[in-house]
Image (cartoon, rainbow, N blue to C red):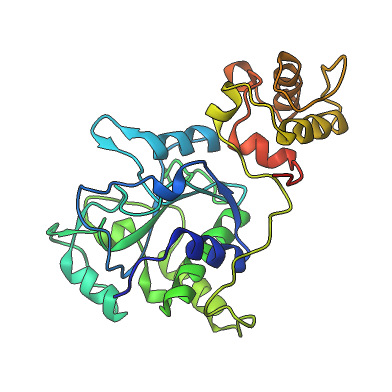
Length: 295
């Protein structure tokens, strides 16, 4: 049993464990407050999205569905190992599961097979969705599995938990089969090995990290508002450096059509086509551009 980590403490714990974090604007207050309690927390649940593509998967998990409002997790773990933070607080991810499983997680005992669906897991678990079709054929890249290990270890280390505090959704309820494609027992062994290493000084109470090397993704709405910001100029300079320039002058701090046209060239360079290369930055293409942190 533990009090949920604050947004700042969670972020610091993830970065301290070496997680590549992408913050989405508003994630610190994006939750299902008023629809049930959040905490005390007992563990972490790992899911798969049954989707492809980072941007669309993040958008789905942020917005949710007509029958299940978002956020659908606290973070989305992409195939490249980046972890997109979209929620803080209660999230619609675990749903109802077996109270005997929750008791076992809390006590860090072996898990019983889930049979009943009588306990609210959204109160008690952090949740991370992993981009994967969940069909047993979609691969799990090494970077993504490493990120699952690091995220889980970071939260366990921050709370003083051990690897048995991390479970798959299919271990919480017999109505689900996620995550499919790797072994949760094997993942817990990896987490245990990571937690068994001597942590760096101060890791029991991770310090607030320094400013990131790269500019966090500002969000789609930020660009559509045609901002004037040093971030736009820094982005433009990176686009020019990547050979993706549609500028006649500049780039400058005000978002213009030239910025959008240049960004579309960058998206096409990454392999995006059609509407996915419309010049409006998304979190995955933005992370790949590595815009230096300026604000």
